[in-house]
Length: 524
Ligand code: BG6
Image (cartoon, rainbow, N blue to C red; front, side, top):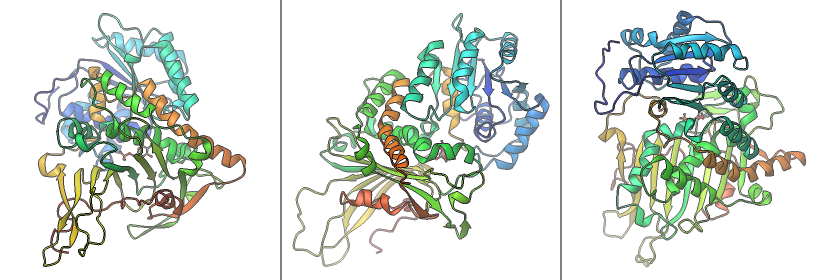
Protein backbone atom coordinates (compact mmCIF):
# COMPACT_ATOMS: atom_id res chain seq x y z
CA UNK A 1 0.00 0.00 0.00
CA UNK A 2 1.45 3.41 -0.88
CA UNK A 3 1.53 6.19 1.64
CA UNK A 4 1.75 9.86 0.96
CA UNK A 5 2.63 10.89 4.49
CA UNK A 6 5.87 10.21 6.27
CA UNK A 7 5.47 8.39 9.56
CA UNK A 8 6.23 10.37 12.71
CA UNK A 9 7.13 7.29 14.74
CA UNK A 10 10.21 6.07 12.88
CA UNK A 11 11.33 3.94 15.82
CA UNK A 12 8.01 2.20 16.40
CA UNK A 13 7.52 -1.01 14.40
CA UNK A 14 4.27 -1.80 12.66
CA UNK A 15 2.14 -4.41 14.42
CA UNK A 16 2.04 -7.92 12.94
CA UNK A 17 -0.58 -8.75 10.40
CA UNK A 18 -4.00 -9.51 11.80
CA UNK A 19 -7.67 -9.31 10.93
CA UNK A 20 -9.72 -7.02 13.10
CA UNK A 21 -13.43 -7.78 13.40
CA UNK A 22 -15.64 -5.02 14.75
CA UNK A 23 -18.95 -6.18 16.18
CA UNK A 24 -21.42 -3.30 16.17
CA UNK A 25 -19.81 -1.64 13.16
CA UNK A 26 -22.83 0.59 12.59
CA UNK A 27 -22.46 2.30 15.97
CA UNK A 28 -21.32 5.77 16.82
CA UNK A 29 -18.03 4.79 18.39
CA UNK A 30 -16.88 3.12 15.20
CA UNK A 31 -17.26 6.12 12.94
CA UNK A 32 -16.28 8.72 15.55
CA UNK A 33 -13.27 7.02 17.07
CA UNK A 34 -12.28 3.54 15.92
CA UNK A 35 -12.04 4.08 12.19
CA UNK A 36 -10.39 7.54 12.51
CA UNK A 37 -7.84 5.94 14.88
CA UNK A 38 -7.14 3.05 12.52
CA UNK A 39 -6.78 5.57 9.71
CA UNK A 40 -4.23 7.49 11.82
CA UNK A 41 -2.36 4.29 12.69
CA UNK A 42 -2.23 3.49 9.00
CA UNK A 43 -1.01 7.03 8.22
CA UNK A 44 1.78 6.48 10.76
CA UNK A 45 2.52 3.02 9.36
CA UNK A 46 1.85 1.32 12.65
CA UNK A 47 -0.41 -1.40 11.28
CA UNK A 48 0.62 -4.16 8.92
CA UNK A 49 0.13 -3.34 5.23
CA UNK A 50 -2.02 -6.48 4.81
CA UNK A 51 -4.24 -5.91 7.85
CA UNK A 52 -7.96 -6.11 7.13
CA UNK A 53 -10.75 -4.55 9.17
CA UNK A 54 -14.11 -6.24 8.95
CA UNK A 55 -17.23 -4.51 10.24
CA UNK A 56 -20.09 -6.72 11.37
CA UNK A 57 -23.62 -5.54 12.06
CA UNK A 58 -27.28 -6.05 11.24
CA UNK A 59 -27.64 -3.20 8.76
CA UNK A 60 -27.43 -3.94 5.08
CA UNK A 61 -24.12 -2.88 3.54
CA UNK A 62 -21.55 -4.21 1.15
CA UNK A 63 -17.87 -3.25 1.34
CA UNK A 64 -18.41 -0.28 -0.94
CA UNK A 65 -21.36 1.24 0.88
CA UNK A 66 -19.72 0.61 4.26
CA UNK A 67 -16.63 2.52 3.12
CA UNK A 68 -18.72 5.35 1.74
CA UNK A 69 -20.80 5.61 4.90
CA UNK A 70 -17.64 5.89 7.03
CA UNK A 71 -15.90 8.30 4.74
CA UNK A 72 -18.88 10.67 4.52
CA UNK A 73 -19.12 10.83 8.27
CA UNK A 74 -15.42 11.20 8.95
CA UNK A 75 -14.91 13.84 6.27
CA UNK A 76 -17.69 15.95 7.82
CA UNK A 77 -16.72 15.39 11.42
CA UNK A 78 -12.95 15.19 11.50
CA UNK A 79 -12.53 17.96 14.03
CA UNK A 80 -15.20 16.50 16.27
CA UNK A 81 -13.53 13.11 16.25
CA UNK A 82 -10.30 14.92 17.21
CA UNK A 83 -8.50 12.66 14.81
CA UNK A 84 -7.34 15.33 12.39
CA UNK A 85 -8.42 15.96 8.84
CA UNK A 86 -8.91 13.41 6.12
CA UNK A 87 -6.41 13.16 3.31
CA UNK A 88 -8.34 11.99 0.23
CA UNK A 89 -5.50 10.05 -1.35
CA UNK A 90 -4.59 8.36 1.89
CA UNK A 91 -8.21 7.47 2.52
CA UNK A 92 -8.35 5.76 -0.87
CA UNK A 93 -5.48 3.51 0.23
CA UNK A 94 -6.84 3.01 3.69
CA UNK A 95 -10.37 2.09 2.67
CA UNK A 96 -9.14 -0.99 0.80
CA UNK A 97 -8.67 -2.52 4.23
CA UNK A 98 -12.34 -2.06 5.14
CA UNK A 99 -14.82 -4.85 4.62
CA UNK A 100 -18.31 -5.57 5.84
CA UNK A 101 -20.26 -8.68 6.77
CA UNK A 102 -23.93 -8.41 7.54
CA UNK A 103 -25.01 -10.63 10.38
CA UNK A 104 -26.53 -11.16 13.77
CA UNK A 105 -24.01 -11.61 16.62
CA UNK A 106 -26.26 -14.14 18.26
CA UNK A 107 -26.45 -16.31 15.17
CA UNK A 108 -23.83 -18.98 14.30
CA UNK A 109 -23.73 -18.05 10.61
CA UNK A 110 -21.63 -14.94 11.10
CA UNK A 111 -18.99 -16.89 13.02
CA UNK A 112 -18.58 -19.27 10.08
CA UNK A 113 -17.99 -16.26 7.86
CA UNK A 114 -15.36 -14.98 10.31
CA UNK A 115 -13.56 -18.29 10.08
CA UNK A 116 -13.48 -18.02 6.28
CA UNK A 117 -12.16 -14.48 6.40
CA UNK A 118 -9.33 -15.49 8.74
CA UNK A 119 -8.50 -18.50 6.59
CA UNK A 120 -8.01 -16.23 3.59
CA UNK A 121 -6.04 -13.53 5.41
CA UNK A 122 -2.54 -14.96 5.41
CA UNK A 123 -2.34 -14.83 9.20
CA UNK A 124 -4.07 -16.69 11.99
CA UNK A 125 -4.09 -13.60 14.25
CA UNK A 126 -7.47 -12.08 14.97
CA UNK A 127 -8.66 -9.19 17.09
CA UNK A 128 -12.37 -9.20 17.96
CA UNK A 129 -13.63 -5.78 19.01
CA UNK A 130 -16.96 -5.58 20.81
CA UNK A 131 -18.25 -2.10 20.02
CA UNK A 132 -21.73 -3.31 20.88
CA UNK A 133 -24.00 -2.77 23.81
CA UNK A 134 -22.51 -4.59 26.79
CA UNK A 135 -25.38 -7.06 26.87
CA UNK A 136 -23.82 -8.80 23.86
CA UNK A 137 -20.29 -9.21 25.30
CA UNK A 138 -20.85 -12.61 26.91
CA UNK A 139 -22.80 -13.96 23.94
CA UNK A 140 -20.18 -12.91 21.45
CA UNK A 141 -17.41 -14.47 23.55
CA UNK A 142 -19.36 -17.74 23.86
CA UNK A 143 -20.14 -17.86 20.16
CA UNK A 144 -16.51 -17.18 19.27
CA UNK A 145 -15.49 -19.96 21.60
CA UNK A 146 -18.15 -22.32 20.25
CA UNK A 147 -16.81 -21.76 16.75
CA UNK A 148 -13.26 -22.49 17.92
CA UNK A 149 -12.26 -18.92 17.10
CA UNK A 150 -10.60 -18.20 20.45
CA UNK A 151 -8.09 -20.99 20.16
CA UNK A 152 -4.54 -19.69 19.76
CA UNK A 153 -2.30 -21.88 17.62
CA UNK A 154 1.32 -21.67 16.47
CA UNK A 155 2.07 -18.51 18.38
CA UNK A 156 -0.78 -16.64 16.70
CA UNK A 157 -3.19 -14.70 18.86
CA UNK A 158 -6.93 -14.39 19.31
CA UNK A 159 -7.90 -11.36 21.41
CA UNK A 160 -11.17 -9.81 22.50
CA UNK A 161 -11.60 -6.10 23.17
CA UNK A 162 -14.57 -4.99 25.23
CA UNK A 163 -15.76 -1.44 25.55
CA UNK A 164 -17.20 0.12 28.63
CA UNK A 165 -19.58 -0.05 30.41
CA UNK A 166 -18.26 -3.28 31.84
CA UNK A 167 -21.36 -4.28 33.77
CA UNK A 168 -23.70 -1.93 35.61
CA UNK A 169 -22.77 -2.83 39.18
CA UNK A 170 -20.39 -5.09 41.08
CA UNK A 171 -22.42 -8.25 40.59
CA UNK A 172 -22.91 -7.83 36.85
CA UNK A 173 -19.21 -6.99 36.39
CA UNK A 174 -18.27 -10.16 38.29
CA UNK A 175 -20.66 -12.21 36.15
CA UNK A 176 -19.29 -10.71 32.97
CA UNK A 177 -15.71 -11.39 34.05
CA UNK A 178 -16.64 -14.96 34.93
CA UNK A 179 -18.35 -15.45 31.56
CA UNK A 180 -15.37 -14.17 29.64
CA UNK A 181 -12.83 -16.07 31.71
CA UNK A 182 -14.77 -19.26 31.17
CA UNK A 183 -13.94 -19.20 27.47
CA UNK A 184 -10.58 -17.41 27.32
CA UNK A 185 -7.53 -16.42 29.33
CA UNK A 186 -7.10 -13.04 30.99
CA UNK A 187 -4.20 -12.40 28.55
CA UNK A 188 -6.70 -12.50 25.69
CA UNK A 189 -9.05 -9.89 27.17
CA UNK A 190 -8.58 -6.16 26.58
CA UNK A 191 -11.03 -4.11 28.66
CA UNK A 192 -10.76 -0.64 27.23
CA UNK A 193 -10.92 2.60 29.15
CA UNK A 194 -10.18 5.36 26.68
CA UNK A 195 -8.92 7.71 29.43
CA UNK A 196 -5.81 5.55 29.54
CA UNK A 197 -5.14 6.42 25.92
CA UNK A 198 -4.72 10.08 26.85
CA UNK A 199 -1.11 11.24 26.89
CA UNK A 200 -1.69 13.35 29.98
CA UNK A 201 -3.00 10.36 31.90
CA UNK A 202 0.00 8.23 30.98
CA UNK A 203 2.20 11.19 31.85
CA UNK A 204 1.11 11.03 35.49
CA UNK A 205 3.28 7.95 35.89
CA UNK A 206 6.23 9.57 34.17
CA UNK A 207 5.92 12.74 36.25
CA UNK A 208 5.71 10.74 39.45
CA UNK A 209 8.26 8.03 38.79
CA UNK A 210 10.81 9.59 36.44
CA UNK A 211 11.46 12.60 38.66
CA UNK A 212 12.76 12.89 42.17
CA UNK A 213 10.86 16.10 42.82
CA UNK A 214 7.34 14.87 43.38
CA UNK A 215 7.48 11.58 45.25
CA UNK A 216 8.85 12.92 48.58
CA UNK A 217 5.74 15.12 48.90
CA UNK A 218 3.30 12.60 47.48
CA UNK A 219 1.73 11.39 50.72
CA UNK A 220 -0.39 12.31 53.71
CA UNK A 221 2.45 14.27 55.33
CA UNK A 222 2.25 16.97 52.68
CA UNK A 223 -0.99 16.51 50.80
CA UNK A 224 -4.17 17.83 52.37
CA UNK A 225 -6.62 16.44 49.85
CA UNK A 226 -7.03 15.59 46.15
CA UNK A 227 -9.82 16.62 43.80
CA UNK A 228 -10.56 14.78 40.57
CA UNK A 229 -12.87 16.56 38.15
CA UNK A 230 -14.24 15.63 34.74
CA UNK A 231 -16.49 18.52 33.77
CA UNK A 232 -18.17 18.54 30.38
CA UNK A 233 -20.18 21.20 28.60
CA UNK A 234 -21.96 18.70 26.34
CA UNK A 235 -25.33 17.38 27.36
CA UNK A 236 -26.72 13.91 26.74
CA UNK A 237 -26.56 14.48 22.94
CA UNK A 238 -27.99 11.57 20.92
CA UNK A 239 -27.18 9.01 23.60
CA UNK A 240 -30.25 9.12 25.80
CA UNK A 241 -31.04 5.44 25.25
CA UNK A 242 -27.73 4.52 26.85
CA UNK A 243 -27.21 7.43 29.23
CA UNK A 244 -30.62 7.47 30.83
CA UNK A 245 -29.98 3.94 32.05
CA UNK A 246 -26.38 4.59 33.08
CA UNK A 247 -26.18 8.10 34.58
CA UNK A 248 -23.05 10.04 35.49
CA UNK A 249 -21.83 7.61 38.14
CA UNK A 250 -21.85 4.45 36.02
CA UNK A 251 -20.75 6.28 32.88
CA UNK A 252 -17.69 7.96 34.39
CA UNK A 253 -16.72 6.99 37.92
CA UNK A 254 -15.80 3.29 38.31
CA UNK A 255 -13.90 3.53 35.04
CA UNK A 256 -12.49 6.94 34.03
CA UNK A 257 -12.34 8.74 37.36
CA UNK A 258 -11.05 5.73 39.22
CA UNK A 259 -8.34 5.26 36.61
CA UNK A 260 -7.23 8.83 37.32
CA UNK A 261 -7.37 8.13 41.04
CA UNK A 262 -5.34 4.98 40.58
CA UNK A 263 -2.66 6.75 38.51
CA UNK A 264 -2.24 9.44 41.10
CA UNK A 265 -2.42 7.18 44.14
CA UNK A 266 -0.57 3.97 43.24
CA UNK A 267 2.69 2.87 44.77
CA UNK A 268 5.66 2.77 42.39
CA UNK A 269 5.36 -0.52 40.48
CA UNK A 270 8.34 -2.85 40.87
CA UNK A 271 8.73 -2.95 37.10
CA UNK A 272 7.30 -1.00 34.19
CA UNK A 273 5.13 -3.77 32.84
CA UNK A 274 1.49 -4.69 32.57
CA UNK A 275 1.49 -7.10 35.50
CA UNK A 276 3.21 -4.85 38.03
CA UNK A 277 1.31 -1.75 37.09
CA UNK A 278 -2.07 -3.42 37.03
CA UNK A 279 -1.40 -5.11 40.36
CA UNK A 280 -0.59 -1.76 41.96
CA UNK A 281 -3.71 -0.21 40.51
CA UNK A 282 -5.83 -3.03 41.72
CA UNK A 283 -4.32 -2.73 45.20
CA UNK A 284 -5.02 0.96 45.49
CA UNK A 285 -8.60 0.66 44.24
CA UNK A 286 -9.01 -2.26 46.63
CA UNK A 287 -7.94 0.10 49.44
CA UNK A 288 -10.82 2.52 48.83
CA UNK A 289 -12.79 2.46 52.07
CA UNK A 290 -16.11 0.66 51.65
CA UNK A 291 -18.64 3.17 53.02
CA UNK A 292 -21.81 1.95 54.61
CA UNK A 293 -24.87 2.98 52.61
CA UNK A 294 -25.56 5.74 55.17
CA UNK A 295 -22.02 7.04 54.81
CA UNK A 296 -22.22 6.81 51.03
CA UNK A 297 -25.43 8.87 51.01
CA UNK A 298 -23.75 11.44 53.26
CA UNK A 299 -20.57 11.60 51.18
CA UNK A 300 -22.21 12.06 47.79
CA UNK A 301 -24.39 14.50 45.89
CA UNK A 302 -26.33 13.92 42.69
CA UNK A 303 -27.52 16.51 40.24
CA UNK A 304 -29.48 16.85 37.03
CA UNK A 305 -29.01 19.76 34.68
CA UNK A 306 -31.88 22.11 34.09
CA UNK A 307 -32.21 24.60 31.30
CA UNK A 308 -29.60 27.30 31.30
CA UNK A 309 -27.09 29.26 29.29
CA UNK A 310 -23.84 27.89 27.92
CA UNK A 311 -21.57 29.94 25.67
CA UNK A 312 -24.36 32.51 25.31
CA UNK A 313 -26.70 29.80 24.07
CA UNK A 314 -29.89 28.65 25.73
CA UNK A 315 -29.83 24.89 26.26
CA UNK A 316 -32.66 22.63 27.43
CA UNK A 317 -32.80 20.76 30.70
CA UNK A 318 -32.08 17.03 30.82
CA UNK A 319 -35.75 16.07 31.15
CA UNK A 320 -36.51 17.92 27.93
CA UNK A 321 -33.79 16.20 25.91
CA UNK A 322 -34.78 13.80 23.10
CA UNK A 323 -35.24 10.26 24.31
CA UNK A 324 -35.15 11.03 28.04
CA UNK A 325 -38.06 9.76 30.14
CA UNK A 326 -40.10 12.60 31.60
CA UNK A 327 -39.91 10.93 35.01
CA UNK A 328 -36.24 9.94 34.66
CA UNK A 329 -34.35 9.50 37.92
CA UNK A 330 -30.94 9.63 36.25
CA UNK A 331 -28.18 11.87 37.55
CA UNK A 332 -26.12 13.91 35.10
CA UNK A 333 -23.73 15.05 37.83
CA UNK A 334 -22.18 13.29 40.76
CA UNK A 335 -19.80 14.43 43.48
CA UNK A 336 -18.40 12.10 46.10
CA UNK A 337 -15.76 11.73 48.74
CA UNK A 338 -13.68 8.59 49.05
CA UNK A 339 -10.88 7.62 51.40
CA UNK A 340 -7.99 5.36 50.48
CA UNK A 341 -7.06 3.33 53.50
CA UNK A 342 -3.39 2.66 53.17
CA UNK A 343 -0.15 3.91 54.69
CA UNK A 344 0.40 6.65 52.12
CA UNK A 345 -3.09 8.12 51.95
CA UNK A 346 -4.60 7.69 55.39
CA UNK A 347 -6.48 10.87 56.28
CA UNK A 348 -6.32 12.36 52.75
CA UNK A 349 -9.79 12.68 51.24
CA UNK A 350 -10.26 12.26 47.49
CA UNK A 351 -13.16 14.35 46.19
CA UNK A 352 -14.46 13.26 42.79
CA UNK A 353 -16.97 15.04 40.60
CA UNK A 354 -18.18 14.75 37.06
CA UNK A 355 -21.10 16.17 35.18
CA UNK A 356 -22.60 17.20 31.90
CA UNK A 357 -23.54 20.77 30.97
CA UNK A 358 -21.11 22.29 33.42
CA UNK A 359 -19.52 25.70 32.96
CA UNK A 360 -16.44 24.51 31.07
CA UNK A 361 -14.78 21.41 29.68
CA UNK A 362 -12.14 20.58 32.22
CA UNK A 363 -10.64 17.27 33.26
CA UNK A 364 -8.11 17.78 36.00
CA UNK A 365 -6.55 16.41 39.13
CA UNK A 366 -6.05 19.15 41.68
CA UNK A 367 -3.71 18.30 44.52
CA UNK A 368 -3.93 20.61 47.50
CA UNK A 369 -0.90 20.64 49.79
CA UNK A 370 -0.94 21.27 53.51
CA UNK A 371 -0.11 24.74 54.78
CA UNK A 372 3.45 25.61 55.70
CA UNK A 373 4.09 24.17 59.18
CA UNK A 374 4.89 27.48 60.83
CA UNK A 375 3.17 30.81 60.28
CA UNK A 376 6.43 32.68 59.74
CA UNK A 377 4.80 35.83 58.48
CA UNK A 378 2.59 36.61 61.47
CA UNK A 379 2.19 40.31 62.28
CA UNK A 380 2.53 41.29 58.66
CA UNK A 381 -0.14 42.28 56.19
CA UNK A 382 -0.52 38.68 55.25
CA UNK A 383 -3.79 37.53 56.67
CA UNK A 384 -3.80 34.00 55.51
CA UNK A 385 -1.51 31.70 53.66
CA UNK A 386 -3.02 30.21 50.53
CA UNK A 387 -2.32 26.53 49.88
CA UNK A 388 0.11 25.24 47.31
CA UNK A 389 -1.72 23.39 44.56
CA UNK A 390 -0.50 21.11 41.82
CA UNK A 391 -2.94 20.90 38.95
CA UNK A 392 -2.56 18.02 36.54
CA UNK A 393 -4.55 19.27 33.60
CA UNK A 394 -5.74 16.27 31.61
CA UNK A 395 -7.70 18.30 29.04
CA UNK A 396 -7.87 20.88 27.57
CA UNK A 397 -4.65 22.99 27.98
CA UNK A 398 -2.81 19.75 28.70
CA UNK A 399 -0.05 20.27 31.22
CA UNK A 400 0.86 20.60 34.89
CA UNK A 401 0.76 23.74 37.00
CA UNK A 402 1.98 24.68 40.43
CA UNK A 403 0.30 27.45 42.40
CA UNK A 404 2.57 28.86 45.05
CA UNK A 405 3.06 32.00 47.08
CA UNK A 406 5.37 34.84 46.10
CA UNK A 407 6.02 38.26 47.55
CA UNK A 408 4.32 41.10 45.79
CA UNK A 409 6.71 43.92 45.00
CA UNK A 410 6.34 46.79 47.44
CA UNK A 411 7.35 48.00 50.89
CA UNK A 412 4.84 45.81 52.72
CA UNK A 413 5.12 42.05 52.92
CA UNK A 414 2.21 40.99 50.83
CA UNK A 415 1.89 37.69 49.07
CA UNK A 416 0.05 36.52 46.04
CA UNK A 417 -0.51 33.22 44.30
CA UNK A 418 1.65 32.76 41.22
CA UNK A 419 1.94 29.91 38.76
CA UNK A 420 4.72 27.80 37.41
CA UNK A 421 3.85 25.37 34.72
CA UNK A 422 4.44 23.05 31.84
CA UNK A 423 2.14 23.15 28.83
CA UNK A 424 2.38 20.21 26.47
CA UNK A 425 2.01 22.44 23.45
CA UNK A 426 5.12 24.44 24.44
CA UNK A 427 7.36 21.38 24.35
CA UNK A 428 5.86 18.82 22.04
CA UNK A 429 4.02 18.61 18.76
CA UNK A 430 0.60 17.40 19.68
CA UNK A 431 -0.52 15.23 16.78
CA UNK A 432 -4.19 15.13 15.88
CA UNK A 433 -5.23 11.90 17.54
CA UNK A 434 -8.38 10.48 19.02
CA UNK A 435 -6.64 8.83 21.97
CA UNK A 436 -7.65 5.37 20.75
CA UNK A 437 -4.59 4.95 18.52
CA UNK A 438 -2.27 3.87 21.33
CA UNK A 439 -4.89 1.54 22.74
CA UNK A 440 -5.57 -0.20 19.43
CA UNK A 441 -1.84 -0.46 18.73
CA UNK A 442 -1.40 -2.06 22.17
CA UNK A 443 -4.16 -4.59 21.40
CA UNK A 444 -2.38 -5.45 18.18
CA UNK A 445 1.01 -5.81 19.85
CA UNK A 446 -0.23 -7.59 22.98
CA UNK A 447 0.57 -4.94 25.58
CA UNK A 448 -2.08 -4.99 28.30
CA UNK A 449 -0.59 -2.25 30.46
CA UNK A 450 -3.25 0.32 29.59
CA UNK A 451 -6.17 -2.10 29.91
CA UNK A 452 -8.23 -2.97 32.92
CA UNK A 453 -7.70 -6.34 34.52
CA UNK A 454 -10.65 -8.26 35.95
CA UNK A 455 -9.73 -7.45 39.57
CA UNK A 456 -9.19 -3.73 38.90
CA UNK A 457 -12.58 -3.41 37.32
CA UNK A 458 -14.26 -5.28 40.14
CA UNK A 459 -12.47 -3.17 42.75
CA UNK A 460 -13.74 -0.05 40.98
CA UNK A 461 -17.32 -1.31 41.12
CA UNK A 462 -16.87 -2.46 44.72
CA UNK A 463 -15.95 1.10 45.69
CA UNK A 464 -18.99 2.66 44.01
CA UNK A 465 -21.47 -0.04 45.03
CA UNK A 466 -22.34 1.58 48.41
CA UNK A 467 -23.29 4.77 46.56
CA UNK A 468 -25.49 2.84 44.12
CA UNK A 469 -27.08 0.99 47.05
CA UNK A 470 -27.66 4.20 48.97
CA UNK A 471 -29.37 5.79 45.98
CA UNK A 472 -31.47 2.70 45.29
CA UNK A 473 -32.58 2.83 48.91
CA UNK A 474 -33.53 6.49 48.52
CA UNK A 475 -35.61 5.65 45.44
CA UNK A 476 -37.36 2.82 47.27
CA UNK A 477 -38.23 5.28 50.02
CA UNK A 478 -39.71 7.57 47.36
CA UNK A 479 -36.96 10.18 47.75
CA UNK A 480 -35.40 11.50 44.56
CA UNK A 481 -32.09 12.56 46.07
CA UNK A 482 -31.29 14.42 42.84
CA UNK A 483 -30.90 18.18 42.95
CA UNK A 484 -31.22 20.43 39.92
CA UNK A 485 -28.44 22.67 38.65
CA UNK A 486 -28.70 25.19 35.86
CA UNK A 487 -26.83 24.21 32.69
CA UNK A 488 -23.62 26.22 32.61
CA UNK A 489 -23.03 25.97 36.37
CA UNK A 490 -20.88 23.58 38.36
CA UNK A 491 -23.31 21.20 39.93
CA UNK A 492 -25.91 21.45 42.66
CA UNK A 493 -25.64 23.07 46.07
CA UNK A 494 -25.17 19.61 47.63
CA UNK A 495 -21.84 19.19 45.83
CA UNK A 496 -20.52 22.38 47.38
CA UNK A 497 -21.87 21.44 50.81
CA UNK A 498 -20.17 18.05 50.53
CA UNK A 499 -16.73 19.62 50.42
CA UNK A 500 -17.47 22.69 52.50
CA UNK A 501 -18.45 20.46 55.41
CA UNK A 502 -14.77 19.51 55.51
CA UNK A 503 -13.69 23.16 55.41
CA UNK A 504 -12.60 22.98 51.78
CA UNK A 505 -13.83 24.27 48.43
CA UNK A 506 -13.74 22.92 44.89
CA UNK A 507 -11.00 24.07 42.59
CA UNK A 508 -12.67 26.35 40.09
CA UNK A 509 -13.82 24.50 36.96
CA UNK A 510 -12.15 25.73 33.79
CA UNK A 511 -9.80 28.06 35.59
CA UNK A 512 -7.46 29.23 32.85
CA UNK A 513 -4.15 27.64 33.58
CA UNK A 514 -2.02 28.07 30.49
CA UNK A 515 0.68 30.67 30.05
CA UNK A 516 -0.75 33.75 28.50
CA UNK A 517 -4.03 33.18 30.28
CA UNK A 518 -2.69 32.94 33.80
CA UNK A 519 -2.30 36.21 35.66
CA UNK A 520 1.05 37.83 35.03
CA UNK A 521 3.03 37.79 38.29
CA UNK A 522 3.44 41.18 39.90
CA UNK A 523 0.75 42.72 37.70
CA UNK A 524 -2.09 42.34 40.12
C1 BG6 B 1 -17.30 8.42 27.70
C2 BG6 B 1 -18.63 8.69 28.30
O1 BG6 B 1 -16.79 7.19 28.16
O2 BG6 B 1 -16.40 9.47 28.05
C3 BG6 B 1 -19.17 10.03 27.81
O3 BG6 B 1 -19.53 7.65 27.94
C4 BG6 B 1 -18.17 11.12 28.08
O4 BG6 B 1 -20.40 10.32 28.43
C5 BG6 B 1 -16.79 10.73 27.57
O5 BG6 B 1 -18.62 12.28 27.41
C6 BG6 B 1 -15.75 11.73 28.01
O6 BG6 B 1 -14.55 11.45 27.38
P1 BG6 B 1 -13.59 12.60 26.89
O7 BG6 B 1 -12.42 11.90 26.31
O8 BG6 B 1 -14.35 13.44 25.92
O9 BG6 B 1 -13.24 13.38 28.12
